[in-house]
Image (cartoon, rainbow, N blue to C red; front, side, top):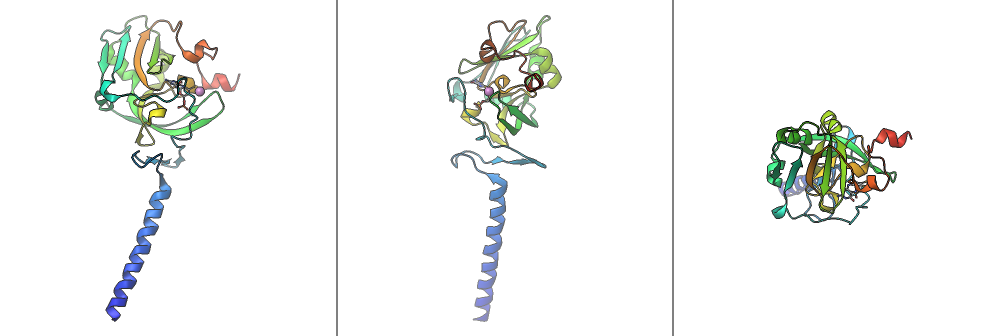
Length: 224
Ligand SMILES: Nc1nc2c(c(=O)[nH]1)N[C@H]1C(S)=C(S)[C@@H](COP(=O)(O)O)O[C@H]1N2
Ligand SMILES: [Mo]
């Protein structure tokens, strides 16, 4: 009888320990959406991150569903070797992780741990032709935006496929969103399908054509 009591006491203690441990895990990682979506982290080192649900969904045509079976990223224009890349090929490239804030002109911002590959390296492999100055990002929803080649090379920006250690959600630009650090949200192209290297941004850029600054510089916007 004594042993029996002793065993039940031990079991109770174990159960308490187990629940307190799992409680910790739950507060460290908040699941997003339904349980089929991988859990995202909300912390990176000392930094507290925003969630992928903290964005305001205001895309020109709403969320897009890109079918990976039909997806490819095209690199074309003023390059020696134009090419077409599958999702698998692109996520197999060397990956980089960075915590970067995105600010929308509407006045909200998010701090996210981004993971992706270097756009600079992809362009270097494609071989830039002399005279190229501009890169236009074309998206699945017909949206476009552009950046100078110089900005891309200096900042070595990423094309991201993960946010907070979880794959991008469809509404966040799956399979790829551009991480245009130090630029306003409208430069962060989602659902990127084509990268065009050119010498002029004339006639492109959805929000740029509507009157937003072509540079999209955060500094310029906040100190105007
Ligand atoms: N393809 C595409 N990319 C886009 C947009 C869009 O409408 N279509 N909106 C831009 C804007 S204005 C912002 S602020 C960011 C973040 O938008 P989200 O909060 O809707 O994800 O995506 C940018 N990328
Ligand atoms: Mo925006």
